[in-house]
Amino acid sequence: MRVMVLVKATEDSEAGVMPSTELIEARFAFNEELVNAGVMQAGESLKPSSQGKRVAFNGADRTVINGPFPAVSELIAGFWIWEVASMDAAVEWVKKCPNPMLGPSEIEIRPLYEMEDFAEAMTPELQEQEKRLRESVGVMMWVPNSPCTSVSVGTTLR
Image 1 (spheres, rainbow, N blue to C red):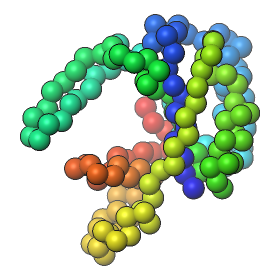
Image 2: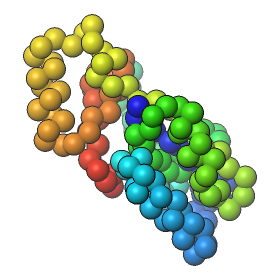
Image 3: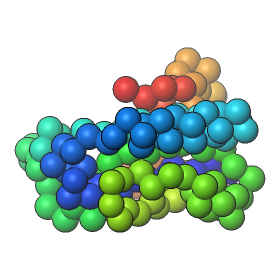
């Protein structure tokens, strides 16, 4: 199963406080362990929400909202995409992770939708289209209940 592992933001990460050399070394060592185990498919850190934007949808209307965004505990500071045997296996990997922040922090693990989850709605034409997209960009992450059926993800997200 594939999971997205979400590193939740903190007041420090939202303030742009950068990690120490020691923390970066620990993160790299953990990422190397994930890669060597065949678990890590992608992963990146995110800049503070003050440098981001949101687009709110309401029917045909689109409203751009400039960061920073409230509710720091609900924001994401980074993520991984992992291939694991089970949710329990993902939890065990997260337990091995060095604390990703300077102080208290939290990591959330969410399973990704896979094409099989949409079997009833997948016509042969949609299956072929998904196969072509997968071959051209790598991995597909399904976004349910969205007018955008999928978001492409390569082996490295930038």
